[in-house]
Length: 518
Ligand SMILES: Nc1ncnc2c1ncn2[C@@H]1O[C@H](COP(=O)(O)OP(=O)(O)OP(=O)(O)O)[C@@H](O)[C@H]1O
Ligand SMILES: [Mg+2]
Image 1: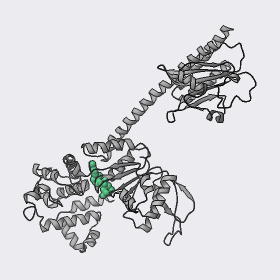
Image 2 (image 1 turned 60 degrees about the vertical axis):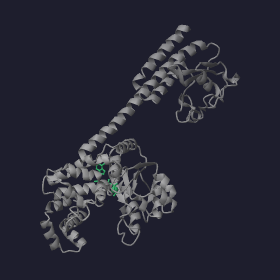
Image 3 (image 1 turned 135 degrees about the vertical axis):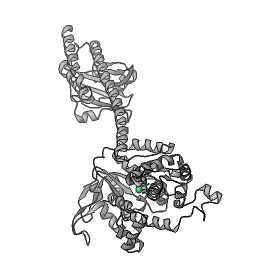
Image 4 (image 1 turned 90 degrees about the vertical axis):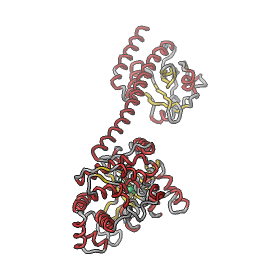
């Protein structure tokens, strides 16, 4: 008799050892263990109850011989019933006849209809001496069962289960590490290949970087805050590139630049005939961004009516095209940006508070350049290298020029700097850019200049010629290098424009702008 039991137990352990290669699928391997117990040892029902980390309750994780409904009823407080007792005391517990045990809750109600005597054996699952769960089995036998032997054997099985779990925890921790490493490697790669990276090692930017890496892999809505030109669009793009959505579209919509009556159809699309002029069906930006990211720039300018519709997409992931009552699903991650104070707008009634809270899940602040002046030199070098390449020129800044740039407050932030560097590279007649060339283009005199009384009418004032040149350059940039458009904007004839492009040597600027805007 005893040797028969031992043989069965050995057969059982041998079968369980066959599951080890599946150990990384924890649920499946635990399920297999219970099935083996049931088959080899004719245990009627078996459950593995583990602590659910989110609720702190003991929950039946896997079971054999229980319906899904029975299983879902098996939720115990840590000190409830026999299972709770086993967990609390970290000791085995045997109920020879569950009909006579008041502590026995039969929460799953799976034993109701049975008339036979059922015995219950439970052992704690211990890891490093601490209970992490409970293994319970029901047997249908009568007096011939040797409970001590059962307990001893199940304790061995519980030890194996604990090892499976420990292996999984270690594995998960490794995976999590690798995942984090992967994010930062991808980040470096996108840095190098696409020039999409954040220059600047100040504490403030290191914090921004850290937050980007944290939020990117999630699907959380991100709200980018900060003055104009601080890098919000760049950050939005980097978050997309670091997410699992990177192979799907990144779609930008500027809520301020599209007239209110067009913005709704732009975002949500329209059906043919939805309004006069809608002569064909057009999907909106939400549909275009499916599985990807929708970047909503200047979200503070979103009209109130559309705010309600955006809120619905954020909450229910649903929307309709204009002129259609078919509800569509949106699998889109939203990144919104603004240089407005949304909280104040919400107080003033210009922005829905509920939308504000929805967007504000993960606010990320892009600090203005004047608050991280230590980033100025590396940014200057970065843009100088970039622009020098575009114009095939090799230029450097004089020490004094760098000092002036570092002192300056940069009201237009990084964008202002990028534009200024491009302008200087075009204007510079020598290989070395001097402070004198720079000063005229700084919108507000730096504090030092203001205090020393320089930079007013004297040598710092821009000449009429350089002012004209910069006006022409700005117009060409805005028109994407299309000269007749730039001419129209300035109210001069295309011929006059052509003459000035030649006079100021702006052919390369025109060419670069046209390439950029192709
Ligand atoms: N830290 C940075 N490193 C490198 N380039 C940057 C950095 N910050 C901004 N830039 C560049 O400066 C320019 C302006 O940045 P961006 O358009 O992202 O600013 P923004 O905050 O979105 O401005 P706006 O509010 O006007 O839309 C872009 O060309 C961007 O690539
Ligand atoms: Mg932007």
